[in-house]
Image 1: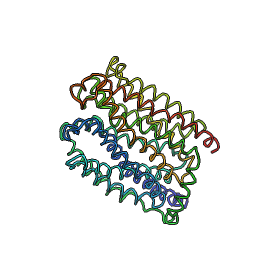
Image 2 (image 1 turned 135 degrees about the vertical axis):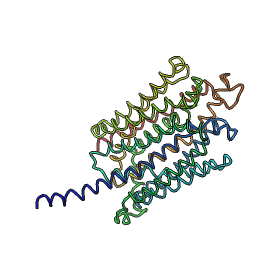
Image 3 (image 1 turned 120 degrees about the vertical axis):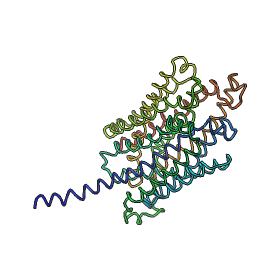
Image 4 (image 1 turned 90 degrees about the vertical axis):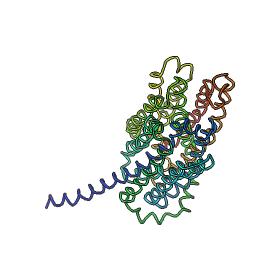
Length: 430
């Protein structure tokens, strides 16, 4: 009887746990694809500029279109996930992302590129919020920091693929074939997710959009929540601009090497992201009283590392030095996200964590979307003014342009210091 009783207790629990991990895997794969889509411009920028006869402003438009689509869907994403549950939202997300990726691969002109990237971004925008909701629902609070960190690692796997592997694939097969392949992977994962994700609880239907919107409006009345949004927006816009848009072109220019070779420091960055997410995600579960100080310290350290990438410094110390700096940046960047997510859960609670994640990512998308065209034009202007290669080729970004990039990224980092100060009193009260 004792053995049978134990089987009755443990077998269902084991099946539930297995199902939770399968569901997490499906959404984590979707997040990896979304992350790859987000940071892919750096690996295709040279081919993209050649095929469409454009310059840095065109690449900035490519990046900006994704950020705007991502932003447009963020508040709806939180409301939809909290109202309709994870499964339905994730399946719709995967369909949009896959179809958008195929449309991007087949786009004949820049206008169609912009529209396709908007569709991809609108689909990808739902994934992060759904993954965070799934983790909050499926795993204990004591494991939330760790599991959210590991969830970030799934994204960084996509980021790793978007560096040297994608650059090599683009060189061998072309960027269009690569994105058609990505679309096919997305559709295969859609079929897996449909089987792995359990139906959303019937109780979800009792939570109306009006109730969620009202609760979200009340949450936004607190200055601490805006501080959290500032912190994440600064981190997201700075790190994505460097690692997802201009990292590979900058390294290729500084050392006059191919995009494939220039992907090595960015590959190290993504590996650092994964390690930082795991170790600082674990630390976040044990440092609840010091989240504000930890975030400020990480932001200052990130600014120092970014300053170390100024072209005169980077060229003096060489490619190995730049690779080490990018690795350290990855550790810091990866560790930032679990700390911010721990703050989100404390400030919004599990019931409204979807809304909290959406507020943060909306702020991040707006900040990143506005900044990309400004960065692109500033880099071109600084390149022309500095009298570098841009004098002979107006599409080329020179040392002056990349120096301007570093300065702008340092200025964009400042909200990451102010944000934790605004959160401090609320975090302590919690």
